[in-house]
Image 1 (cartoon, rainbow, N blue to C red):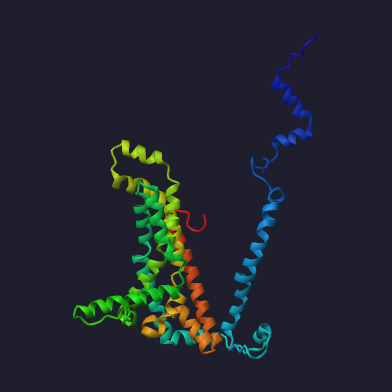
Image 2: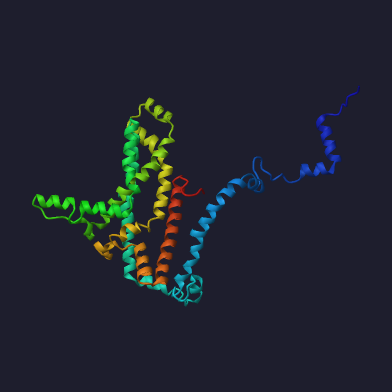
Length: 344
């Protein structure tokens, strides 16, 4: 049996030279298919069951969140809903006014008063309300006994299920003109105190109500983030000589930073939406000068005064500014190295 004496490399070179197709493959452009990358068709076929499961939810979001956006066209009209029983017909037959409603907004002092109150409430709640769930979550997480932790968490989370009517009724019984605090002051020879009708303290009252009602929900979110922290990190930090405060600063807070950044971005985007029902229920007690915010301004002009085009223009301005705030806050989160609402 004879064996070829031609070297392997030379034989492959000769074969390539005699085979045009092989030569073209060797000298042509590299293949663009990346290893491990799945095509869109394969992914759709693979995930078709999950896509069908989410289809009803997507249809509901499309129907109730995106289709109503088309109604913003009334911001450029003198909209009259009584032209027809059909809302679409009313939109088609309402006269166009262009940017007249937006010009009215710029010249309306009541609108700017609502903007001022809205921003002031937002900054108060950002400073006084936003850090509180983080501190309470750290405090509850440091409790050793599971029963005490569960009881504390349940007590703090319970007011979240109360309606704003009940929350305001509780505060009225405590801080109203005939409330417990006022009666206690009168029994000791002092004048009564009615915080519920004081315009100067109304913004702090609103913030206190929000803290009491919704701080428990924030605790749940931050406790869930703390549950994902590995105990090995705390043990390693303790072996290195770190005390409780050092472990909280170097282990706990870095673990909470992504969640804090995400909630802060969402909170900034929600800056122009501050407690519509909460403030509307107390609007008459302190007057619109101290309590009017953008949501109540839109409701008052659109529903009560029947000026739908003007109210829609104010709501459209609020939506555009809120979107800009979300994008700006998300950009800041990216600069800080966090993901934010979406990745880069």
